[in-house]
Amino acid sequence: MAEIFQLPFMQRALMAGIILAFLLAFIGIFVILRRMAFFGDGIAHASLAGIAIAILADLNPILIAIVFSIIIALIIYLLEKKTSLSSDTIIGIFFTASMSLGVLLISFKEGYQPELISFLFGNILAIRVFELYLIVILAISILTFLILFFRKITLVVFDRETAYISGINVTAIEITLYLALAVSIVLGVKILGIVLVSALLIIPASIAKLVASSFKGLVVASVILSEIIVILGIFLSYYFNWPTGATIVLTGTAWFIVTFIFSKILKFKSS
Image 1 (cartoon, rainbow, N blue to C red):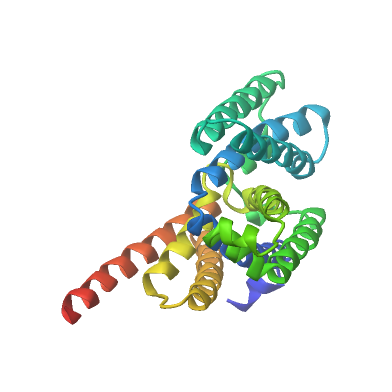
Image 2 (cartoon, one colour):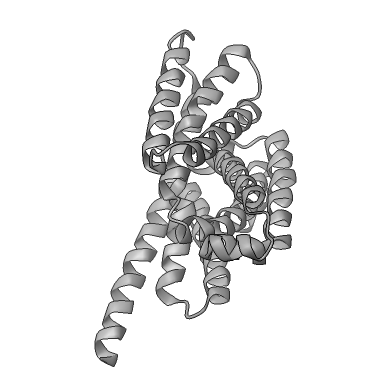
């Protein structure tokens, strides 16, 4: 058991997993409350175009994917405010267009692309030192914003009109939240992959919502559950040689199902 902590790749995987679990669980609270789950999924899939551009140009995929996802997030926000189209419609358009662009660009690159596969399905065990540093710096920056402006963000999410009347710069808070979410999702792609990353935004917060009796309890429970799910998933994937992203998601899903069943049983007994 102790020997795995001496392996450099496991040390990097656990450190990145712990940091991203905290980040995605924290920002996932606002995703659940504002019903932005499809936005998270859309940005994750849209990042494929950025990754494809990076692979073709021989650049760092995470950096280019972050830049591309930020641009897409800004466009989505602006179109939500300037058109009568629903948020889901706009996200659906750019989600599919970006995915299509990514597929088209990748077709120009001959041969097997292991880097692309790792971003599609996640492989935290293969995380590099530079990627770990990038995750640490950006995660700390985003968490600092979320913590410093926690009350304002919460008010904007719960009651936009009241926040506006209170003198809060609602537009600035919303845009920054969109950008923070976009960056968080791209960072999470390294753990779970494009296909599965939105699960870590949704599952811990959803489990916490079943058991928490207050908003503070919801935040704390979501973060703790996310950490346990990610760490347990990493260990299981290492010992059984399972895909890391899929193992983490299935661990979280199993936990959600068990929690849901027990919450219903307890509710039935108390009624």
